[in-house]
Image 1: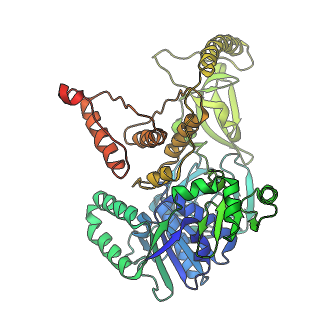
Image 2 (image 1 turned 180 degrees about the vertical axis):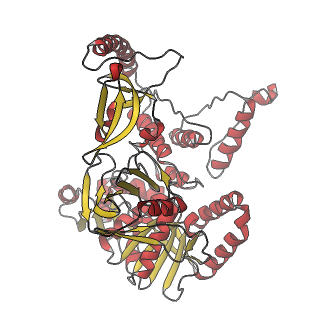
Amino acid sequence: MEKKFRGEIPFWLKNKKNNLVYICSSNRNIDDYFFVLKDFYKGKILRIKKENEVGELKKYNYDLLELINSNEKFIILISLDYFLEDYYSEANSIFIEKGKNINIKDLEEKLIDAGFEKTYMVAQRKEYSIRGDILDIFNINQDNPVRIEFFGNEVDRITYFDINSQLSIEKKDSIELYIDNNKNKKDFFSLMSMNKNKIDYYYENNDILQAKIKRLINENLDREGDILNKIAELSKIGIQIEIQKFSEEELKQFEVIDKVKKLSENTKITIYSEEATRYKEIFKGYPVKFEKYPLFEGYKTDDKLILTDREIKGIRVKRERVEKKALRYKAVDEIKEQDYVIHENFGVGIFLGLENIEGQDYLKIKYADEDKLFVPVDSINKIEKYINISDVIPEIYKLGRKGFKRKKAKLSEDIEIFAKEIIKIQAKRNLGNGFKFSKDTVMQEEFEETFPFTETPAQLKAIEDVKRDMESGKVMDRLICGDVGFGKTEVAIRATFKAVMDGKQVILLVPTTVLAEQHYERFSERFKNYPVHIEILSRVQSKKEAN
């Protein structure tokens, strides 16, 4: 076992001689290590984490094969879920070259056999669409979909295009499509079966990983033996990393500039921050070094102390998120021919499908008197599916007339009156002062890392929004809405933890006794290692217990 601070790990890994497989206890750790290694490591870095995206595992399969076959030095940062997976040992691909003949129907059959879904317009990986002589494919190993234009069976043009604007990004003379149709193949490999003489294995936060192992076994009982065998092998050859943290006393010391100055007299200190120039002025005359780099967290060794904005200012460095390819066009798949749609400028019409005119896709909409409106796909944000709350057929106007404009203007007036009332109510709320909760503490981060599941993007956004509300000092007014099983309880649990860390008590109201029992068990399990007292109050409890 080796003990390391989180901030030290990427610098420590980059100096290792062998290739590495490093099993991280959270997606946050994977991202933090990845961004530092990307700037300082000369080899290849593969980041494999569970985010529940379409085709995600198959994309990682392709990336792994490409990495292994490259013969370059590498580091793999991976979540436990995907470390325990088996991967195809070879990838099937289709080579498409401009000027060559390809039977589009044969290609479509291969796509279907590989599990691709046919749609009006591609919106996410493993989808394809065919419109006349144009074939769009969003392959699992690409960040952007590809458009292949045919002249008969001859490939006339190949371009990658942006999923939102539908505009071409890059022309290509040829492409290789990774088509995962390994249905009949039995050759697999796991990360444990790779060349162990040239690969070092590390795993961190064993307690958290053990909890995740239990969860994985409960969810995959048919794989219990396989999972336990891989974990046993990992325990033999892998090196456990125990993550160290600064003590609360140390963190309080780092937040006081004068104490850091005093500390620098006997300790070698380097501050990593994008505000390095400002820190130079603050510590002028003191033996402190500075690096203009947004390191996510500090650390200490026997001979030096590394500090960041997280320790000095209590601010966590947030890397710019890589924007996911938006599903903006997925709405087209929810609209079928003959469905009512509404255009923001022309009102309700009838959707007649997609039509390609001179290489550009248009949505065709019918209005009164057989008028037709052709809307470019990059203007689809102006169209929505019409939701009819009754059986009344909506009124369809003739293009060029003022009927819809008058109706829209009247509705706008009504909405404006209603909005003014809402603003007045909200203004009164804003005049009141709420409690301003503290920024996330180290203990909050530790607590959140014990969550045994992978947060969804929507769940993370809800958590961030709630925390921002709590830290604002304004009266909170937020509704979290989602289907059963989508993670609303975890949002409440993290908000609760934040509240009790500031000395507050929390009441959670639920509609049924059964739900009260379920939440009591969930909260008790999540808070069991923290000094938080949890009780349940329902009709099941006696008066004595209730009092």
